[in-house]
Image (cartoon, rainbow, N blue to C red; front, side):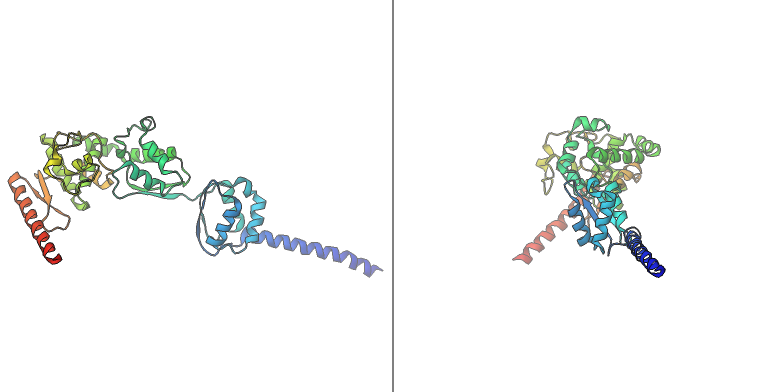
Length: 348
């Protein structure tokens, strides 16, 4: 009788122990065990539901235990708290961490890179929106919004001076205001007292330095030439000469010209530096930081002229006098003519 009683009490205890072991095992799996095959960048848009997110985790990250994800999502209440964002899921992440990450918005910052040739607001807006959740129309609207830009000390005309090409760490879900706040923060950080002092030594404000840098940027793709070309234009500016910069004429024609001809130099625009002395009203593109640094730290020389090299390697030949400059220009023109004839002969 006593033996039966002990046996009767032992079975429920054994069942309870087994239940505890199962619950404990599942808890351990959900909270401690790595749950994915590979690292995966998960983008959650505002219209995503938990089912779509789970499908993405299974197909993209290779979720090892989909049921573990379901348990973790249920425990945290992720379905009702799902936050849009950019999330990096690592192979070591357990299910519960991913559930919390999505519910609490633990985003991994996006790298927003502004680089390359940017000549229009539309191009800038597209470059930003292609990397962020924000729509390009919203960014473009801000770039044309005088009231919005006034809060940052800029206008739609000179806003390119605010933009410093670089790679920024910023939440993928950042709003237009968040993005411009960050750009202004980096602008203020860049323009130290020392850089402002260097600009003043050239007779320039920070915005004017960016205007000059945009002209330098438009002249060459060779960054080692930036300080030398900056020196040429600063020499002209300080002597009261017209800048006579072809990139400003191209700007007047919305960059539709293949070549700048004499007839193009007659266009009546404050950006036409062949017609009007001094700097144009605003930057003609978004200049790289290296171009701004070249304006602040130009080569000191006596050059007032430069033209494309007859070597056709993208470099330029520099001259002190106009006669020397014309000699270089004729040398380039002769080589250009020779190459065109050679090409014409080979095609016939």
